[in-house]
Length: 230
Image 1 (cartoon, one colour):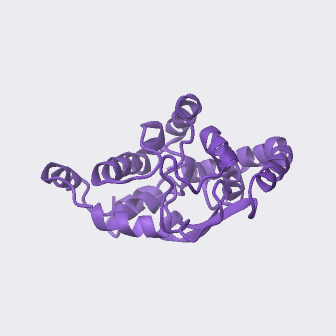
Image 2: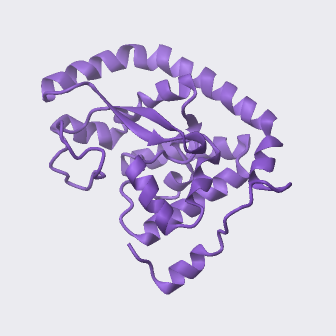
């Protein structure tokens, strides 16, 4: 997916950081251990509350509806790229018929693979709720760059220099790119690169206040636009 000369020039501003020198990105992360520890504690406590107060009764109800709507498992578990590039199993409610292309092709508008109930789950982002289980066990965070399929992460990394920068923090249920409007399938250089820009900004500038701001902006954006996953 080639980009325009202007877009490629713009991408050059994001140079590959030297993670071995003092003052590098990894050094900055090492210097923010207190923040990362606090972030993990908040993730654990918040996800535990969601699991006890919401998922404990809502997931069984949604599971019954999914089973009645179409054949297949309740959950859709997919390998995604996580912290420092390590793969993990991302959990979602199944919104498509069982098909052989779920790990290769992103969902598109009016995708025929999406079930009737699946459209509702995606519109309301209820399909993302099981990811609080990922947060609870430590694979994800509430706020962070959205996790990609291995295939997409590899392809995007060939287009945008140092795309691995996104993985220097845990992937999130919501993120900076999503509240800025970049969600759903990334189909061209422009959408891939600008999504990366916001993710890179978050990785370099993450702090408790920014996390709070992103969470506050996520709720009204979900109401206006539906599924915010990306």
